[in-house]
Length: 501
Image 1 (tube, rainbow, N blue to C red):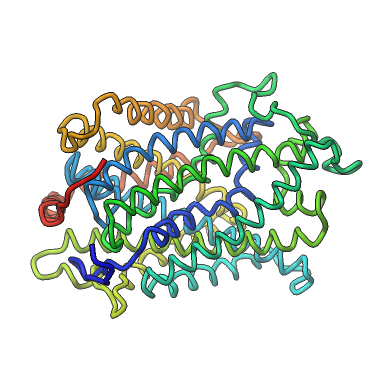
Image 2 (cartoon, one colour):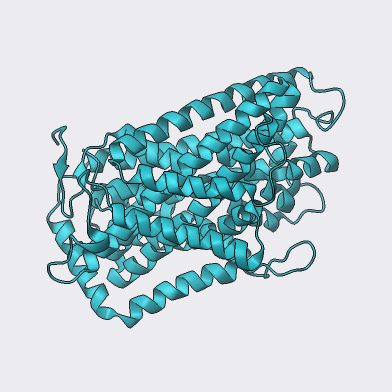
């Protein structure tokens, strides 16, 4: 396809390279932020076996990525799983799964905006700019992150994704340098002599469950592994904006998943080894507000903590921007495909002069802001609460969307044989993905999990309510599903190109 900005149905322009598609997926995955704040929640469930939980999550993500890769070779649509599932399992299932993914991106927008507030406030406090921030202080930065993400979303995606990849790349490079230095010290036995990290040592025990820990509990921790990887599929929402979508989007998705798998397993292993695998080390690991910041300070120097904290804040903001980008493309696709005659380029389906769905971006940002406001005003949540709550809810919803996408890939490739060049034996890959996803979902609902103090988790309930709302809406308005079905069929028939292996 020519290297020009060609408009597509609805006004989106084909202007993005494979690296810019990778930029969106990497930014939404936010590896530098995720490695700094997500593993603590996993440690509370699986103890020292945090890297094992992330390894299982990596395997699950790579299995799921297979379905996304195959579907992206066949379909190019801004609606991502909405289009994939809608074209393979029917428009109602597509709208339902797309609504689920929209919920995930909105909740993850809250997660990442909250992380921006947490890390940003911590940085300002550490350098003395804001010595004693009030409890509501991080929410100031949360609001700024959401506003800034919206403003950057309405410029052409080409600029935004390039910025995302650059920011995240610099931060990840710094983290890898720190991890390498710490690993060398662990291998040489040169760990701190006293304090929190005195028990640090190189050991492969981090890939085993400690005595007394239920092995099945690892799958409770896997949720935060999936949270860390979530976003690897975000490039799929750029199917109508990539120059060569059948080649570039699958490469971006698979490349991001592979990178994330190696990165998170290695980094979490070094983090846990640095703290130590005994009870005291695991407790300090779980209580750390900034894993890499604390490790960098102890193993390298106090100045490194400030750099890591600032890098994590920037990474979190980049991820927030990616969430708004992904959510806006979904809202845009819904509005365009379900609009009545003559209205497919107005309202939420409109694009600005730069070819960006500005109204859809505003709608997505407002939803994220409302989640923050309701959590803070009615439930007394602080930024750490909105991070943890929204992360768990968004991931549970995402797992359901992954299941439907994987089923759709099985039907397209192996039942309908729409891609006859794919050998039948490869069906074991998506089937294995369903096993991992299914068990993870079931284990997070049965037996119904509880906090350490016995209070029940309400996260599965909220996730279920979001999905139920989508299901009721789809079933209550069948005309919307019919219009979506016609739009998906027209998009597929009007955009066919030879597919390679």
